[in-house]
Length: 188
Image (tube, rainbow, N blue to C red; front, side):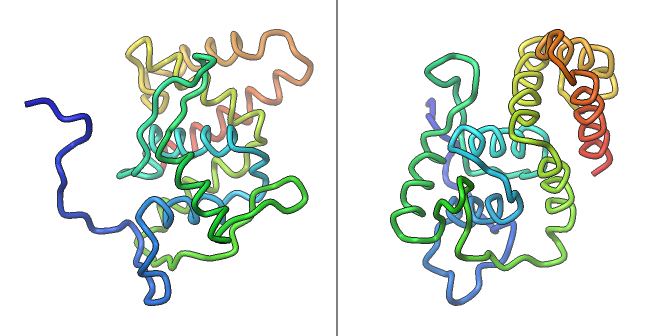
């Protein structure tokens, strides 16, 4: 038998759901956690990159979002994340302020989420354009059978970043920031 999704398993949420948030789904809780952690989410594509990176790089070990290549073929897209964002916008859990996505609710977080919060902070230090490049590089390495955080990925990572950035102004600075984030994520 083939399943489109894994069979239903007992799920323990990665963070506790407070009594006033018991009506929120796992995807809504995860979305709130990500939006609260990243102050400069500028659009849905940036949120898609962030959620993809968080799942792919182990920041969210049990991500509720499933990704496929988007319409353009380059960036990953999750229909589940898109639907969750629309629902959260409609219910007022998140909204747009000064061109950035803001959460109006805060998921309850315990000390068990320290590693996850640290990982999200490494992604938060990157600019939206840098998260996009990191997403491209992660996908490129993945297509070659290399995990972006593996020790064997050092040279391929640099090559993929150089290829993604080309000779753009400030490419050296972006490459250093991406290597620093990669190193920090690999330590977590």
